[in-house]
Every structure is written in C-alpha cells, then in structure tokens.
Length: 253
View 1 (cartoon, rainbow, N blue to C red):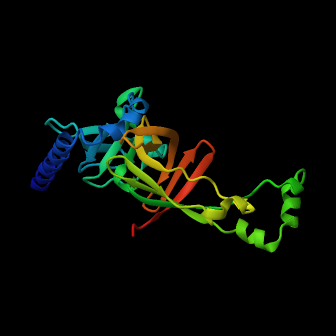
View 2: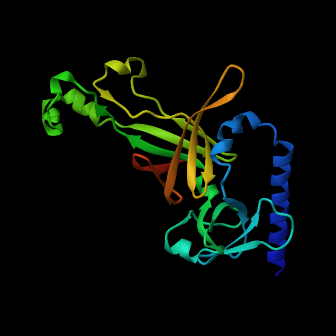
View 3: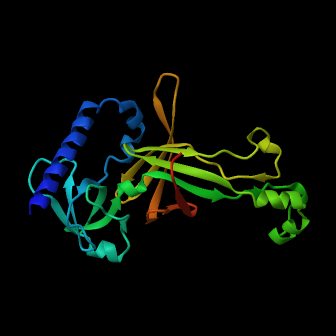
C-alpha cells in the first residue's frame, strides 16, 4: 500500500512538472502550430500517464489535465482482442487513448507514445524511369533488355528515416542517390517528404510537411493521414494511401 501511494504522488509530481512546462512555454511555438490547428481541432484523443494496475483488461492513467482525485480507468479488453493496443504499457509512460464512441467506459485504442518515439527506418528500392524505346513492353521484357549495371541499380536500396520526438516534432532523413545528377539516372527513388510534425487525430496519425518562410511564418505544404497497424519495440507499420510501409527501429547516433 505504501509503495502504491508513493507511486501515486510521484505521478502527481511528474504531471505537475509537465503542465507547468506547457504553461510557461505555451506561446513559444504558436507560429509552428498554426498550420495544423484546423487539422486537429476536433480531436478526441485523451493523453495521460500510465499508472500501476494496467493489464490486458484495463488501463489506469492520470490525465495530463489532472486536477486531483484518483486515476481514471478504462476497459481495454475489446481493444486488446482487436489488436488496438499499440506498444507495451509501463508505469509512467505517456499514453494516447481514444474512447469507444458507444461506451465511454471503454477504450477503442491505446498507443504508448514512448514506444513511438525514436528513429524508424525503411529500405526503399528505385523503379525504372520511363523510356521511349521500351514503350509497349511488359515488365518482364523490359527486365530482359536491361544491362547488368541497371539491374544492379534496381537492387540498390536507400534508407529513409522518420524521427519521432516528443512535443509532436518529426523529421525525415535520407537523400536520393547521386542527387546532383539524378535526372540522368535510368532509375528513380520514391520522393521522401520532409515532414516536420506529427499529431494524433481520433485514432489516426497526421504527418505534416511544412516550410518556414523568410518572415518566420510556417506554412502547411501537405498533410498525410496514416493508420497505425503495428507498434512493437523494434517494428512499426503505418498504412499510407498507397499501402502499408514497414519500419525497423534504429538507435540514434
């Protein structure tokens, strides 16, 4: 009992520090956040810190808007059965929770934000550029006519990296091979978007690409809404509009 009480007061202290930091620095990023305000204005995600007692049936947490009282409890049995609990919940982890629309005592989805943080990498392969001399040929016929040098290029992957950080910071790393002469290469790699921000929105993740102009104003370039399909200690799968993309965890250098 003494241990649980000590943990409870520890959570209160951590929560107070988080809220205090948000209040003192709340105006620092107004320019950065402005482009995405309209994208997340109707978000119903609940954020909290995991408490002792979480298991496959219930999640116990203190909301970040904590104003005193006991931790909140939500039933996650259905979410667990439907593989909608992403990550491994540990005491003190920050959670993103979406309630069941039909039963406020249940959670439809739980994401361990701590497990999402870090560097996630994927290997991408190039495709053959369109060539006038190969129009009308099947893929197999095209491959049969390719010299070994181009076959080698087609099997030369690049590593694209998505770096998720707290405070909704996101950036991507990776560049096209032979960038200065890429237009003359017979192959081309997928475009790597330069994301700068991530947000939860009613169970999905919004990846935001933006640019800051010479006046310091951040303008939205694009926003991609993706579904979270898998999140473990070393694997992440996100479903984009063009299909799922798998990532592996890489320690930050």
